[in-house]
Image 1 (cartoon, rainbow, N blue to C red):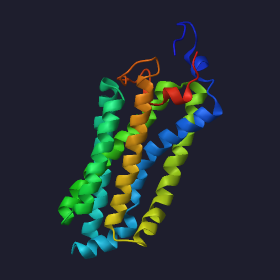
Image 2: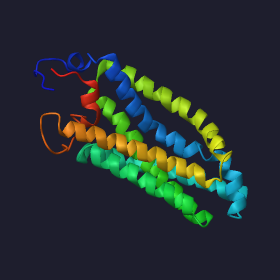
Image 3: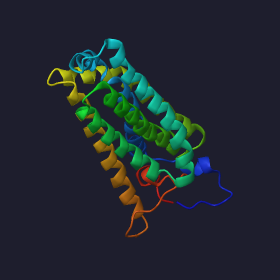
Length: 229
């Protein structure tokens, strides 16, 4: 969407149709929710994990520490990369990393492998949350950005509350491994959603190939939320 240099960016980006804005919030909300789901969804399974892997309760809880460490490290890495390489590659690589790590959690033969896989999970989830928050600054400014960001903060507040209940529901029907299977499915859905958005963006102007988007265009969701000029 082209704009005149003398037109304030807030004026250009603010008129977003309510359905489009809702769609954008759902996309970004799903991305930021991946982190809390990764951290908290498996908490009800900790006693079963400790019992099956023959470790103490405190040892099994170290896998949570590994997740938090991976999440923190991932934010430090993904932030600069998304600014220099664009949003797409860090996001897609991060989600794929999360999926691979979740599969490793399912197959983990001991607590050491599980702890390492959980750290990798955290790094993958960090990519989703960092890119989602950066996207808000790419598309909007002023009060519009504040409104969208407040919705994402609401998701970040609610997701950790719901995640343990979701994990407990999964445990009612299977072993602790199924919690990580559910995370594989969730991350796979996010990956498909992001890939579809990028494909649509690549064809927005009649092109045949997906475009390589960067922070100043936010191609991942711009077709969904910004009305054409």
